[in-house]
Amino acid sequence: GNSVTQMEGPVTLSEEAFLTINCTYTATGYPSLFWYVQYPGEGLQLLLKATKADDKGSNKGFEATYRKETTSFHLEKGSVQVSDSAVYFCALSAYSGAGSYQLTFGKGTKLSVIP
Amino acid sequence: EAQVTQNPRYLITVTGKKLTVTCSQNMNHEYMSWYRQDPGLGLRQIYYSMNVEVTDKGDVPEGYKVSRKEKRNFPLILESPSPNQTSLYFCASSLRGDGYEQYFGPGTRLTVT
Image (cartoon, rainbow over all chains, first blue to last red; front, side, top):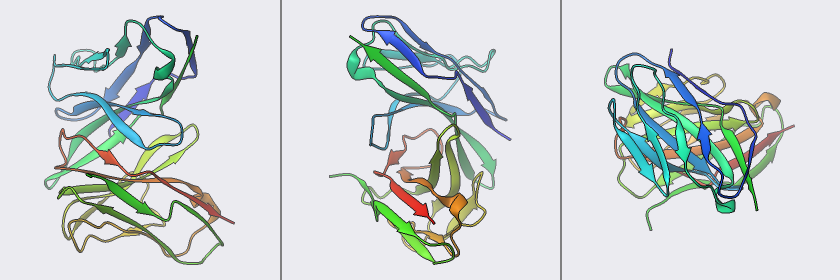
């Protein structure tokens, strides 16, 4: 089956530090890849996505590149802010047969940014 | 306002007492799904629906039922809840199944005693 593996947390960084959260996946075919963010007490919201190999998704200073050769979709940000403190989920959408698409999420990485 | 709504937001119940968590979206989305979120396990898909009258099992469907009689509604039914179904549940919808953003509801925190 499909799977997503992302780095264990929690991750604690100082403000303006560089962020990398690793994500690798296993899937048949050509999945779409996503990063979602969950702020405390809220549902998930899309941060960025990429739908084919070598695509780069970007939003709010965050970036991730779809690397098919390494089956990876690592999240990066050059300078984090306190407001970036949240849980980040890597996810994929893959064809599961009979016209259906199934979503698979990683376990999430909690990021805390301290002033 | 485009949104996914869930009710109730909080529910405490006892083992074996049937319950339904409702989910509704106003974006005319074809794809809807249910997830449960547990510490250390992340989000796991319970059931999903590509369109009206089409539903499929996700990764953890045991103990749950769903129906999709209308495009906007996708209720989650627990016929005989057990304590291991205590969790935070999210409903989500997207325009279609592949490559589209999922819009999440606010979550339903369920406790089964």
